[in-house]
Amino acid sequence: MACQTLTSAIDKLVQRQGLESYPCGTGSRHRSSWRAHEHLHDDGSTGAHTEDFDDLMESRPSAWYEETSWSPEASQLKKLAVKESANLKHSFKYSAFKTLRIVDKGVSVVDEGLLKFNCLEELVLSANNITDVPSENLPKTLRVLELFSNKISSLKNLTTHPPPHLHHLGLGNNCLGQPEDLQYLTAHHWPQLMSLDLSWCGFKEQYALVDALSRLPRLRSLVLQGNPLTLTTLYPGFTVDSLERLLYLDEARVTSDDRCRFSGLANLKASIREEAEITVAVEKMTGVPDPASLMDDDAPEFPLISHGYSVCYEFLSQAPSLENQIDAETQTLANVPQNPEEHEEVTSAPCSSADLLETCYKNQNQDFNAPVEKINTLKHEWAEVIEFNYKKTHRINNLDALKSFLLKGLWLTVEEEKVLSWPAQSAEGTETKASAQKKGKEQSGKPKDKMNKQSVLDLIHDPPVKRILGSVHVELKSLLEVKDQIQVRCDLGTMHLEQTIGKPFIQDKGQNKKLKDDRKEEKKGKPGGDTAAGQTNATSSKGRDKGRNEEGTGALADESVPSKMEPLTVEFSVRLGKRTSDSQASECMGSSK
Image (tube, rainbow, N blue to C red):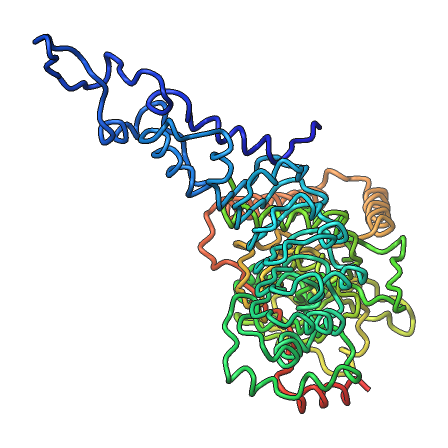
C-alpha cells in the first residue's frame, strides 16, 4: 500500500477549491451562461461586462463549489480569491489556514511540508494510518493536536520537540499503554497541556498512570474510558481523589459531591490490588413450555420423567497463575461460534463519531484470545416463572483479557435436562424396565397413587438427556464506556415441546430381541396360528400399531398449529463493583483476605 503524506492530502483539498479558476483567479469573469450587467460604454455601445462580487458568491450550487468542512478558512479563502484575487499569492494560501481536519483520508506520514502552515493552531488527523508523528514536523503554533484512531505505538518522536503551547492532545484508540509510555507524559514535554485523551488504549495500571499525570500542572480534562484500568474497583474514585485539579473525567464534570464521595481513596494505593470485581445475576425465567401438558392420562406409570432447567453463560476463565497462562485445551472466544445453532455444540466456554467508535471496537478486538469457561446455575423444576435468584462474583486480575472479553460479549444459553427413572430390580432380579413398563400399562386404568418413600429410594435413573432450548448473545462493551451495570431481558424466542414426552417407550436391543423370540415360541406352541385366538392377537397387535401411528400423526398435526406461547425470556445482569469511599475499599480488602 502506497504511503500518503499529510501535505499531499491537504493539497488535494485545496486544489478542489479552484482558487485559480472561474469565478476565482485573475482571468475573465464572463461566461454566456452567467447573468451579466448591461453597461453603456463611452461610445454609446452596450455589451456584457463582469459580474459583481455578490453575483459571483451566489454560485454556491454550481459545479465549482466544494465542501469546506475540513477547514473554516477554506470558505474564507474562496471569498478572498473572488474579491481580491490579485493579492492571493501562493504562500498566502498556507498562512491563511488556522484549522485543518483531515479525517479518514488514508494519511500515513506526517511530513515536513506541514511546516508551510505557519499559522496553524488546530490539527485533526483522526481515523488515518499514522504510525509515528515526528514533532519537528509540527508547527510550533499548534494548540490542538487530535490523533484519535491511528496506529501510533510510541510517543518518543512526538515528544522530541513538541509544540510548546499545545493545550489539547488526543491519543485515543492507539496502540499505547506500555509502562514506557508514561515517561513521555510529563510537564517537561507538555507544560501547557490542559486536556488529554487516552481513551481506548491499553493502560491497565491506574496507580502508575495517575502518578505520571499528577505532574502535569495545568491538566483539567482527562479521558480514560475504554482502558482496562477503568474496570478496577477503585476507578474512577482513585483518579478523582488523586488529581485534585481535575475538572472533567471521561467528559463528565467532577463535582464537589464526587470529591466528597471519593475522599480518602488516594491513600489506598499500597493496600488495594488493581483488579476487577464483576457480579453476574440471573433473576428469573419465563416462557418455558409445561412438559406435563403433553402427558397422556393413559401413559404408563414408568418410567417417571423429571425435567430440570438451568441457565448457563460464558465468562472469562480464572487463570491458575498470575501470569495468566492460557491452556492450549481451553475454549477461547476466538473459536466460539457466532451462530446460536453452532453454539449449542460448545461445551466450554467520513467518519462520524459512531463510525470512529466502531473502528475502535474492531481494532481493540484484534488477536482476541481470552480463555472462557461455561458456568451453570442450579437446576430448577418447571414453573410458569422459574426463580433462579442466582448471583456469582468474579474477581479478575488479567484486565487486558477482561477488556477483550467485554468487547466480544457473551453467549447465554437455556438448557433442559430430562431424566427417566425406573424401579430398581427386586431381590430375585426379575423386574426389569420392560416388566415395569408392562406393569405400568396394566395399572394404567387404575387411579395412579404416588409411590411411597421406600419405592422412591429404589428408583434407578437413566443418564440425563440434555437439550438446548435457546441461546442469545449479550453485548457487554458498554461496561467499557463508564457504565457500571448492564441489565437486560434476553428474548430467546418461542419454545416447542418435544414429541417424545407423551408416551415414552424405551427398550434396548436385547429387550426387542427377547420380545421377538417370545412371539416365535408362542406361534410354535400354537400350530393353528391362523386360529381365532391367533387372529385376535394379530388384530390387537395391528390395532396397537395403528393407534401409535395415529398418535404420531396427531402429534405432527399439533406441531403444525401456530404456537401462541410467550417467548422464552431470561432476566440477566452484569455489574462492575466500584468503591466510593476508603471505608468500602477497606472492607473489600478485608473480605478478599
